[in-house]
Image (cartoon, rainbow, N blue to C red; front, side, top):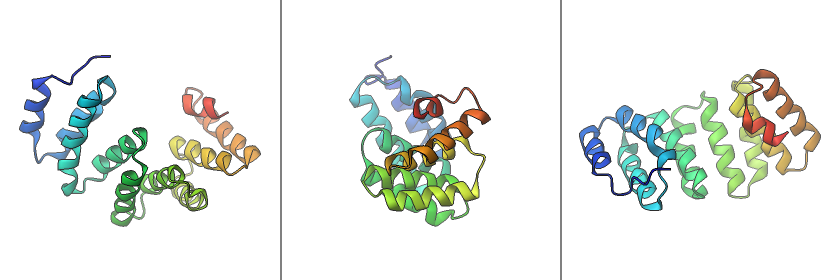
Length: 165
């Protein structure tokens, strides 16, 4: 992995894109997993956090996922709440809030959100796998296995479904 923590080009790109949440999101999605140092990831998070005032749903979703990946479940939950409030008909918001709730130890509420997400978008593989993970966490292994199998049937290349399976 590249260590981009001292990459001035990233700062220049971020400054040039300030206020353009789409361009900031594109940079973040392109480079997030290339960072090897915590300092670089911290800088990228700061760049994303500056842009959340625009309330771009895709940017908020990405930021929420990053918070979940980095163990910042409380912050992820706040972002997910705002996604659900601003777009209650979008399944991804419920899925992200469910993941954040599960990460904060509220499996029951996570299950409700995953059920809502699944009702809105029953063919979304990410939602199917996330719902299966919640089912697994509450001891419903047989139901979770069926959900993982459903995700695999939709796409045999879904690594998250295979890992859960």
